[in-house]
Image (cartoon, rainbow, N blue to C red; front, side, top):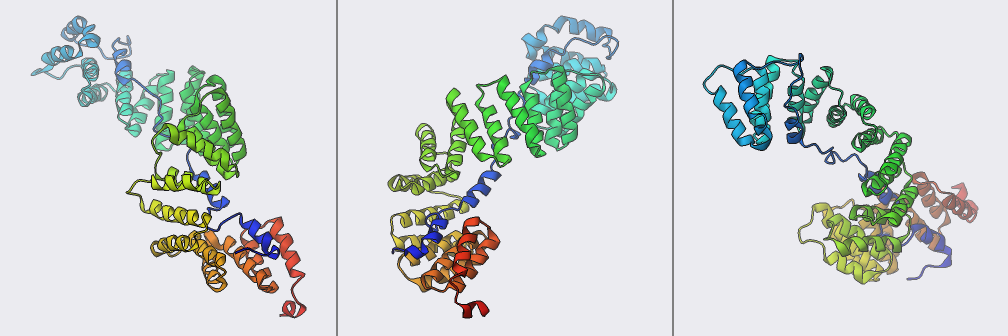
Amino acid sequence: MKRTCFLVFVAALLGGTCGAQSSDQKLDELDQRQFLASRPESRPAVDARERIKQSTSFLKDREPEMTTDEYALYERIAAMLTTNSELAVRLLEGMVNGKEQPSPAFAFILGNAYAAASQFDRAEASYHSAVQRFPTFLRAWDNLALLYYNDGRFTEAAECFAKAVSLGDRESATLGLLGYCLERKGDTIAAETAYTQALGAEPANLDWKQGLLRLAIAAKQYGRAERLAQGLIKDKPTDIQLWMDYAGVLVADGRKLEAMTVLEQAQTAMPLDADSLLLLGDLYAEHGLADDAVNAYRKVFATAAPRGEQKLLQFAGVLIATGKLDEAGRTLAALPAELSPAARLERLQAQADLALARKRWPEARAKAEALLKAAPLNGRALLTVGQTYLEENNLPQATFAFEMAAQIPESAYQANLELANIELKNRHFAQAASRLEKALKIQRTDTIEDYLARIRALVPPEDKSS
């Protein structure tokens, strides 16, 4: 049905069909996403075996010494530790089997041999034996920490790295890895100190700078995080992940238009990867640049396998908003047969939105009602049902659906605007004003306040007094 000009202002404020996801919902969804450098899986890469291989020489007057027999064997096989670790292990074990416990120094060398042969459990036991009997054995603490780090045992690694630092290790790698392990433990203050000290020893290290960036983001120190991100891009301008980190800082700070500009700037210098294109598409969609959003999403789906149910649903939503209905239908059809419970509900809503866009009111209502059977308090579905009845000029049923939606926080604002629309159509000015007042309590805008003032002027005196 067509609405009269008397109702146009509320319809414009609704911004399209009731089934469409509201901009506030998109904002909240985008705020919750993790685009930042705080992904713990992107930890600094460390070749523990190589570092352990380099730790065979002894620190004179600071570490335990081997016995004469142990040292004689060590001299013969020292080179073999890096060239034939399996044979070195057998020779070293041959010396200790059936004999008294080897010295801490020999246990350390045996641990190195085990590590070189990828026998990490035995390496751990050997290093433990060394540090238990010689607690100030710095390199044994270092190597034990590396084993724990590579195994993802960050709490234990942090304890060992910290012990090495307390014994005088001031290498950038030790301090930086200590910072990362402390970060993973949640000890952010100590982590920041370790990262800062690591940068003092190696100012150009990007891993430690990114660690400080993650900590700044976690503490919501967005100004500091922005400066760190900008500095990282200057250090490595062709690293798309650094641009994503910068954009992520701006997103977290609520400066999403600037984040979009940052990604557009990155796109002029290098091809964006799939994650960057998806973020850019999300930002375009949020700012009403639907065609640009579609183009960004298409680049992803044209060059890679579908990015999961949520991305396909999001892409379908943007296609519906831009009127590309056939492509939206194909996208929904491409969803996997097995969906998560949440995605099944979102698919029903997307199918209802598509039917609304095609003006198939009964089909849209059927999809929304199917959704409501599984989720009776779904505000978007109630709005969709109300919209279909409104389009069929069934005002009593539309009013009932919108009144139900008005009881649900996520849909109350839009439902009250729709109900104001219906009251205006029936020239119930006092009731329309009441609905707009309820909407303003949820979200205050100058436009709604202006129209409320106009409607109040139309309320008959007897209604005002009552």
